[in-house]
Structures are given as structure tokens and as C-alpha cells.
Length: 289
Image (cartoon, rainbow, N blue to C red):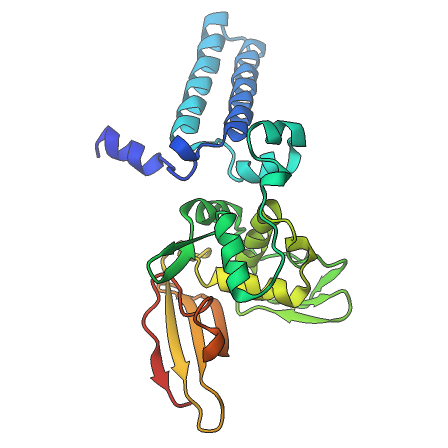
């Protein structure tokens, strides 16, 4: 394998070049300096010569800088960390402040799509509507491949109290039970919600049902399975009933491990904007069930 191919595999264009976040880069360079100094100091304490200790620290710093240059960060989730913990005046100086965040003012499908597009969550390619590379990578970094816990669900739903009844069922605020189609779906929703909290004003004010609807719509567009990292496949099916209005069913599942990531049915009249325009989905096929 050539050096160039290795670099290409490591490079994250969604975080580098014109997409590079300067506050994130500054934070990661500072962490690289701390790590290099710590390694050098540790070498001296362990009895190494000054030259060896300084050399070890220099190697750590050089490797860290190479990672930042290729990937944009050392620590996964850095964009969320800087938005959450950097002072507003620092973020404003780099154009990353609260005033620059889109405001989600309506849960109308077209309004949600427009707002998420401005927030860098969705991108349109012809008739297809998919996640941006940057948002997809950020969500992937934030997905916990283990069993999701009640605290993650509580944060995702903005609830006061959540009790786990099982790996995919949670009692929320003592008012009802929220269920997901799989543990993978829970993990993805928790990561999606964390990113939306950092990108949107108004997201925290949505009621639980609206939050679930938006998360499901985005989850259907996640391309990689959090369980095995294989590609997810999305299918769309039109359901024609003899005594009911037509509906559209969309489902996303892993090709390798069959983990179900999303499953949603909506009236056909309401599906055009949000459901049928799933990037990479198979064309709708008719069913009379």
C-alpha cells in the first residue's frame, strides 16, 4: 500500500481544508502540546536522558500534528466540545457563535428540511435528500456501540427522568413508554440529538413526539450500521389499502447483521418531502397489504 493511499484513508475532508474549524484546531494543537510535554516529563522522571525525553515528546507532537492536519482533530467529537465549552466571545470571533445557529421555528416538514439544510445537517442532490458528510461523520463519532443507557435517552428526549425497562424500551417522566426498533436505533438517536442540540436553536423546545419524528427521519439516512459498520440499505414501499388512503413505508436495515435502524409509515400525501427523498433508497414499490 502506498504512502499516498494511507494518507487518503486517514484524511477527513469534512473537517479539513475549507471545512476546517479554527477553534477545534486550536484546541487540539493545545492538547498535542500538553501530551508532548507530559511524555517528555514522564521520560525524565523515569530516568531517561534529556535528549531521549525531548525526542519522545517531539515524536508525540509530530504525530499529533499530522493527525490534526489529516483529520482535523485528535479527539472525536471535538466540534461538539468546542461549541459546548468555548466562551461565546471566542466562538463569535471565529463565526461559530449562537447567533449563527439556525432557528427551528416550525415542525412543518418543508420548514424542518430547510432549517436542517441551513444547519449543515441535510444536503440535496437532485431529488435525493441526505446527510452531509460532516454531519454524518460527527454522528458516527458520537454513536456508542454498546447498549444505550437511560441517561443518553433522557438527554435525547429532554426528559426529567428516564427508567430503562429493557434495551429498547424506556419509561419517560412517568408518563409513558418510548420504544425503538433496536438498540442500534437508540444509539443513533442519542448521537443525532446531541449534534442537533449543538447546531440548532429551538431544538430543545420541541415536544417529545416532534423530536422523535425528526430523529427518525434523520436516522433513516444514516449509511453505516453502528453495530458492525456495514452499509445500511433503505427500502421504500407504497401501501395501497382498499379502504384507506395510500401510505408509504420506509425501512433501513444493515445488509450484514440485519440490525434494523429505522421503520416508519406515513400517508403518501405527506411523504414526498421527508420520507421518499431518502438518498440511496430503492424506488417505491406497490403493495396491497
